[in-house]
Amino acid sequence: MTDPLRQSSYDRTTEGYAPKFKPRVIELIRQQLEKEAPQRTDSIGGEKPYVLDLPELQVIGWQNLNQAGEPYADIWGHVFGEFDIDSKFDSIPSKVQSSGCYLGIFEGRDSVPKLWEQSAWDTGYFLGVEVGDPGTAPEGLVHKDYPASKYAIFIAKGVPAAAFQSTWDYIHQEWLPSGEFKFNEAGVFFINYTEKSGPDDERFEAHLCVPVVEK
Image 1 (cartoon, rainbow, N blue to C red):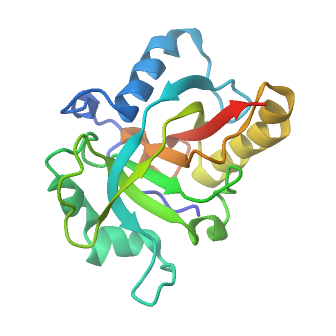
Image 2 (spheres, rainbow, N blue to C red):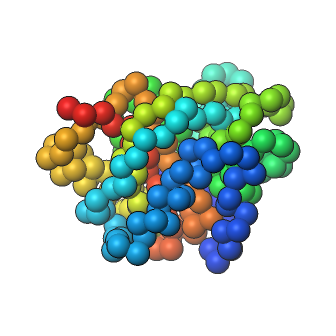
C-alpha cells in the first residue's frame, strides 16, 4: 500500500493536535516525542524506538469491509470519497485527534504486518480516531476498545513503501531478535498518522506503534 493516507498540507501547525479532553494514548505519544526529540537523530529505519506504557485505547472508526464482507480494492478512494470519513470523524464531539490525523489499526496480528504489501490492508484493518468518550458512533462507524500495553514506537520517514519496508526490516531483523522484548499478541499494532503523514514522498512521516512484552 503506497498511496498516501490523504493529500494534506505538510506545513500545517500542530496547535490542533492537542487533545480536547484528558491526555490519552495520542497525547502520551506526542509528549514523549517532544521530550526526546532534541536527543535523537532520526532516519529511515535503523533508529532506536521510544518505549512507553500506553493505556487502553478507545476508538471510533471504519472497518475495511464492504457489504459483501470483502475488503475494498481502493481503500482511500472509498473512505475519502463517497464515504467522506473526514466529515464523520469531525462530527464526533469527543474526538481526541485533530482533523486529518488518524489511527490505522491492524487487528489479530502476531507480528508487524508488511505494510508495503496490499494484503496487509485486506484483513482486520480498522481506520479510526481516538475518543475520550465513545458516546454514539456516526452512521457507518463503530466503537472499539483495545487493551493497554507497553509499546515500542518507531518513526517511519520517507517515501511510504520504502519507509515501511526499511522500518519493518529493522524491527524484525535487528531490534526484536537482539532486544529484551517480543511482539505482544494480546495488544494491537497501529500506525499513528499525524499532520506529517499526508505527502506521498520523502516528507512522509508516521509512527509505527508495536505492542511488546518482555521475553
